[in-house]
Length: 462
Image 1 (cartoon, rainbow, N blue to C red):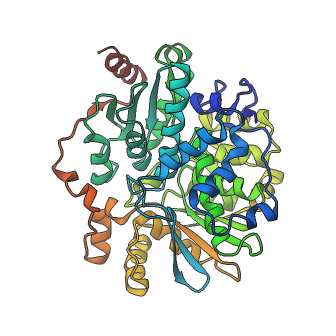
Image 2 (cartoon, rainbow, N blue to C red):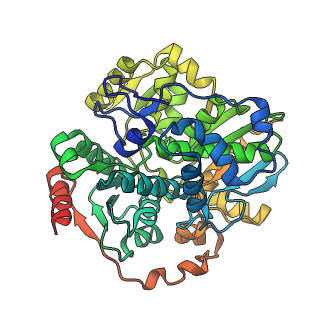
């Protein structure tokens, strides 16, 4: 299995190389050269299997010879051993034909744990084998950072630096990043919004002298391994509702497009997904693009669903790559337009290709709060703001096909928003009960590439 860049000018890599590299050297994102397909019988055989067994069957074709079967099975087993639910991604029925997939039973209470816990295991195995050391730098709108820190804290061959937008994450999200005591963990509160953090991260990757000098690796959803791990729960839930003999649809609250793009990969592999519904908050650039074919930045507005406060949606580039028949030159042109003008327009053919798979919807702040209240009153479910957006958008797209909405985070990660909507403050699980008592350790930094690079170099040399 080989991996190519969405912009067509970077070296072709193996799975291990793509995983440890993150962003391609031409600025693009790695995707598999071909997508393996599973037969209906292959999918049918997943019925009754454990999450770990399904994970192995789904991901094994993408890994190539990077790991032996036993090594890869070991990584998967260790990755999910710390989850708080035996089925890992359980389903709850909300209404006729509407189901909620709970993705918040991992160690940091968010869907990012599904990928990050596995990546931590794969990185550790690959680095031990090679004797190399890497510096992971990530940007987060809230959940990726804590999941990465949880996965890599204390590992000998890795230093982890997480950039998050100062004042724009929830207190629980912040404390999950700033309270770990391990010396290889570094939380950086950067001035600006998530798009600024993501831009500086990409600047670091595109500074090849710095990148090579510190052994830079990335675990944002720019990393293909992140997307791959998220493909699995599309299979596990669809099979539990009757796939491949019954179609399903998914609604995904998303800002950076990685989680819903994983659904596209599952569909390309043969999972009978009818529609993939993009659910956005008031920062609705993806919804506007699906409506008009114009991807136009208009400024990020802080919201009660901060993990979706994003305008430069990195993984949308992967979707565009497939919509343009894997034409790297076309994608480079679009990304150059976005960098220069803050916008691009998708051609008719490519837009038609996107609309074959995706629908979209948005929910504003008032609607989000109202959905949290209504969900509690009508179903007894306490939803985080992101999950509430997904549920509300899904309701506008439910037909004869079962709809599965992804619940991306535990409500206790956003207690202020949930309490304002319901009058009840959600509690953290017992293992996190002392989170607000732990000492924080954080570095404040400007939105400046050199200042950030200096922080990384200084910490690595100390």
